[in-house]
Length: 291
Length: 299
Image (cartoon, rainbow over all chains, first blue to last red; front, side):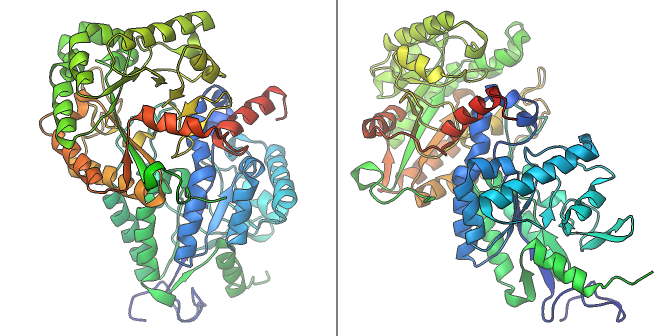
């Protein structure tokens, strides 16, 4: 390995399995029509916006799954369980294609605005739906709509979740601090690779607030590839915050295809896998030292 | 479920459909956002440019490409620009309704809505050479069961909602030709300082990048066998500098013989004849289910 990696201390365990230079956890948030407008009820009278969101699970997700399988890539899908209830067959295919499915609220709730009990109620409701509709119990969580509250990490850990992919402050996994030792594994992402920042556009409700322009697709592809290459060069862990309804519209699938080509061009030196595999690896590599 | 329409989906053995549409509001869309615009002649003229120069320039580009297009026009604008629109329709372009004067159908009684819908259709029909059968929602939200109201007012299709990339049917059988905002010119090009359009006064983007996006979308719609609907406004792309983008885009679309180049009404009639209801998990039906669930208090 010629590139400078984050493994700079001989005493530390290797960041990644042997012969792997970096880790990539492709991740997609299948929000569909859930989110703020569903939470505040304004979506009830706005079918234009509803159908724009519903396009995600209905049209964009199946094509995205086709593309992932074409490139032999496994990914993680964070899905609000309202979407699971209304598009069960589309969600079943996520699992059939050997991707991971993980928690993302029920209605895409804002966790920082929810009490401890409300957060727990959402998690229990989601777990029940995942078990009943899809026969799985997820182990991962990505916080929907902005921040979580001070008690969330501990609550999730006690609930049985092993990792979160919610934070922005690192480019490697790390452990949240629990009340009694080590908590959740965190697989942090960054806004730089959130498709909302470059491509999402809606006039009513307005997003972005100033109605700035939709970026040129070719520039977006170059930016996203530059992000991936940077993480790979430094031997880090790259995850994405992509939404099928935004990034998997027909013409934008070509952006993803460009990115998938860049990733697969590195062959086995990139460990492209599900978030849960990275979390489990991280836990194994960092045995907790008894205090 | 399949993610792409099967072979034989489109007529005449074509692989996909492409519709070129024009939205000619003559500034009513801007006034709906900023009512004081009418008294600001400098700013208002940004939009008036469409009727003065843009319409003719777009028409010339369409003529050069040998294309028939679908024009969505508010009834009031049709009255105001009757002579201009007669020139437009004489070159085989079709007129469809964009309401009357940018009214909100979700904020008026059903009788008033029905009256305006009918008036718009009659006014446009007196100018059009086609049977005016299509509608695009001008402002506000699509009221619940508005599909039924449109059918009663003599319309058979709409190009207002999203949720798919091929035509589908509302529960009432009204045909929907879904439209996508990244295939409109306004989000990319609208600009005015005061009142501010867009609100945050984002930079005018690279023309080449916009053309590349529209072509990338077209190529993908063709690859996946979908219905591409480009939506142009004379005030934003009917300009000397941007008409070249339109010419290039049309030339690109024209470069394939497996594309069903049709007007929106032709595509709507073709879909309507099939008489296929949308599946239960189609966005239009999930929306109905969602409203019913919420009203039943299932939350």
